[in-house]
Each structure stands twice: as structure tokens, then as C-alpha cells.
Length: 435
Image (cartoon, rainbow, N blue to C red; front, top):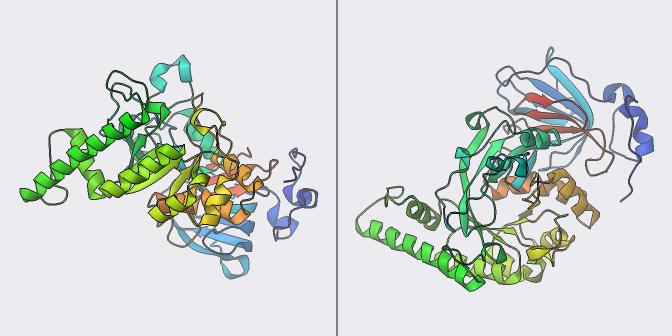
């Protein structure tokens, strides 16, 4: 796509629209002179914000030219519509931007467990525990650092909801959770404490020795054995008359196996190559658990099988390096998944090098450059991940009753020169500097 020349401040944005070549249904220049903040940052309890955009992308419906999103004092959206039909109460914070979208939902990350310091501080890397290959009892909330600078960094680039936790690298490395990218403690940020159990199949866990698998077949066998132990515990519970949710064992790992088999919590399996993808699908058929495929670099080779299994995909970041298990990755896999009707999301992912994260907005932009439509790309980083993670009643689109999470842009979100000039989380203005 065309890349406009980067803009220099403090030129008013409205005056630069023709130079950007954008047609976004923008209101007169006086209504959109960049980013207008009507008051100081509001606390969540006092928040009442009106956001007016030249184009408001609701994601769940049609884009609105000269639209308004009104957020009530409870931090939830109360109205979305054309400016002519929405009355903005007097005295509220008013922000204006060229383009407004829902807050971005990062479908897969280790941010908060993996920090910004990297090798300079080994204790900054809590996303993988190598003492055992199967540890579903490890809780993400016990390791999440809400104050890590990475959290603020991705937030200021539009990510308001973050699915994070233990990363790839073990057969079951631990749990994942969902947080908002604000708050100074995990309790303040927490949305869901347990969303999935993170697993991996393939060369990444073929370490050999010390209880680790040495081959693909050994890895699948170890995972099957773990699930069979859980099935035996579940059967024993049934014979003894235990109800759903009743404790099964003092063994924490076995308790979590039972939760997987009951269908209470999905198993998210990182599987890049066809042998691993097919192994994950076979395990799902055998045990009937809820499966989310993660990574799936070679998914375009087995589209029919994935679609028939009814399994959603959290795709690898579009620009992930094509090496190792991702050697056959394609920039066009997102488009192919969309054409096949397979639910998918584009995440920031987990890189082997520091700071171990990408920017979900930029990964989406690259997918848009390789055939994915604007609307479908925006959906892949907002509403689709919310649906996969079971959060679509709260986030992912601009609708009354949903969380007041918005991102304000000074142009097309997927153009290189565009900046994020405001971020709102549940009605609180958490960022107002153009980045």
C-alpha cells in the first residue's frame, strides 16, 4: 500500500487530510483540529467522555462518518451514532480524532510475565518454567507485573485488552489470563484470571532427557498420558458421586487436567507445522476438550481439516521471522483463513528475542498489505480475538453496554505514517500523546 511521508507536528491534522489521500468522511476542520482534551484525565469512577471521530469504526456494524461515542460514568458505552443524533452532555470530557476504533485486543502475548529488561535481569522472564514439561497449575496472575514498561508501551500503541500468560516452550507451560493494560497491580488490571492452558507441540519441546520429550511422538504420548490420568480421575469422581467443580485430587496438575476434560477451560496448543497441527486435532477428537490452535504457520496446508474440526486459530504474528518451526510461514495465511471461514485472530505473539513482543496494530497492518480487507483486519485485532477468548460481551466493538475502550488515530490505522493520539480504557483517558 502507499506510504505517506511522515507528518511533523504541530501542523493541524485536518489541514493535512488531502495530503494523506484519505477519504474518511471527516467533518469540517474546526471539528477535527487534531486531538482536543476538554479536561484533565478522569478517574474511572468519575469518567464521562464523549469521543467524536471523522470516521468511527464500530467493527460490529458499518463505519459512521462524523460519529460520536458516549461513555457513561460507569465506564461503559452508552451511545454510538452520527453526531447529529447523539447529544453530548455539557461539562464532559470531549476528544476528537480523525479515526476512532475499539480498543485493540491482543490475542496472545507474554507481556507482563516477560519484561523489558531481558537478559540483563533473568528474573524479568517468568513466562516459561523449565523444571518440568507439564505444569498446568502455574498461574499467570502470580507472575504478572502490571508496572512493567512493556505494558504501558503496548497500551500507548492501542492495546487495551491483553491475553497474556505462560508462553510456548513446554507441553503445558501454565495458565493464561486476560488483563486491561492499566492499573498498578494485577488485581487492578485483571479481567479473567484463567482463560486457557498454554501448551506446545513440536521441536520447541523436543529437548530430550530430564522428563522432556525427545521426539514429536514422545511429546504427544506424554500429553495423552496426562489427559488419560485426568480422564481416570474424572471417571473416579463420577463413580463416587462428585459434582461438577468438586475437588478431585490434591495433585494440582491433575485437578487442571479434569477442568480441561470437563470443557471448563480450553487447551491452547502452539503448533506450527502440519504434523503438530494434525496431532493437536487428533487429541481434541480423542478427548473432546476445547482446543484453540496457536501459531499455526502451516495452517494454509490443512484448511479443510481445521475448518471441519471447528477450531479457532490465533495465528502467528504476520511479520514473525520465517525460521525454525515457522520456516514455511506465509504473509497471506490470514487472508486464506478468512476465505476458508475459519475464526482467527492476529496477535503480537511471543518472540524468542527481547522484548519478546510485537505490536498487534503493526502485525494487522502487514496482513492488510497482503490481501486482508480493512474491515476484516480490524476485526482480527478487536472483535475476533474477543470472541475466541469469550470476551465479546465486554470488548472488541463499539456498542452500548460494552466497556468504553477506544483508540484515537490521526489517520488510517494501517498506514505507516498514522499515529495513535489517544487511548481510553473503561472511560479513563490513559494516553493522550501521539505516538
